[in-house]
Image (cartoon, rainbow, N blue to C red):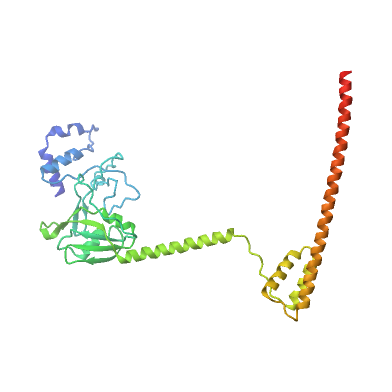
Length: 347
């Protein structure tokens, strides 16, 4: 059928139309342009047949391109006719117009919308949206047909059909919703039927679903818990180490503490423990003598420290006096040397 359409279009065009396209070939070879119609010629031929033109231009496939859909936002898909002609697709400039192609499914055909029309309007995307609203379905559309068309976008979790010509489709992943939205505006036709009940114009939009919102909120709470845990670990890592806990009072600990108080290196820690025991009210009649001995040892150690402080202060004052005396002597000698030097220079 498609070949007959090309031949009919070819017969309506003047021979001069192909004259610039004839390639020079060696004898016995067939030109690669034979039977190939350029995009402008293809548009004219399809217009003569009363059908909308289909783009013949192609572009190098991209990694994110889904060949099952035959379309992607901002990229002109590879024309299905090009591989059969044995030609590589011609690269297009980045500002080229997006061209969507006809999508052939097993039981239906999807025809792209007019590229000159603005893109279909959509509502604001709900948080964690995995559900889409699909309107404009044919009256004779079945759930199997919906799975056949939208299953190409991604795994479908559930389909909720209505008695009217619309349904809600919930996908397994969020990114598949963006692929499904690309089908908005396509005309769908079941088989080759021309009945109104077998055709419609798809309208795909975001839909609100409690399951989507619940999963999104659970995911946000999980991320918040992970963030709190990460911050706590970071704070614990940067926090200075806590002092060791104070041991509880006992006869054994009391005897050891008495020895620590007499040790210059362990005195600060011992005094801290003793102060804590006093604040806790560990003193009673039975251990009062022990506490009195420890307090007496602390006072003796403090008196010794004060005596050492006074001794060091005295030594500092003596060092200052020695420094002043030495400096005075040095200055006197320097003045005498300067006098002698001045006499020698003048003489």
